[in-house]
Image (cartoon, rainbow, N blue to C red; front, side, top):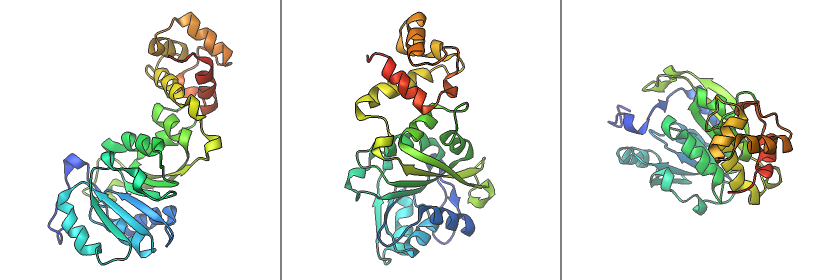
Length: 265
């Protein structure tokens, strides 16, 4: 960082991983090879970029911070397969990437939920994501029924979620206030996802169910969908779900049954 005469931008949530072993572990989980196209979101100072390129992958690095572009260009423009793009990933067109691309990213904490949804719902989704996120968020992404959240349900609807190594805050520059964890998202096949015609209804019901997660599923859905509690309980029983259960206790299969049981708006 000193050589490049740059400082981390707190407004962009920049915390750069500097531990070689952790960087190598992330790279190994991404399994990059000469035939792979990898989207790296926020390459920062290029520590992970360097390792990914060494494996022969074609790398598209999307960086929003204009102050980092010159240093990245000097370091990597002479490396085969490197493409640097100055853009906000939230408005970047994923459709221009080759099908089956992979995503590797040290995601700013404040963008995690948005990016998970963006990558999940894209018409051209990645086949694999290896993301470094806040440890608490990683646990939510990989949670089992009993601890599920809206983020966990959303992720697991589209991805097979595996948790990787925990990376201590001290291994970043500057260090964040909390530890991070690697999460691996492998795209589910279409036949194991929610049917396309049920997708909108599914997330309508799930969103309503988690709108008041401290309440019973009957109370949450009744308030969220604006229907009477008695009617809500009838639909829950049709789906063979106890109205007294909590939203976080339901499995993906049970949420799908609920989406099928409730009438569309």
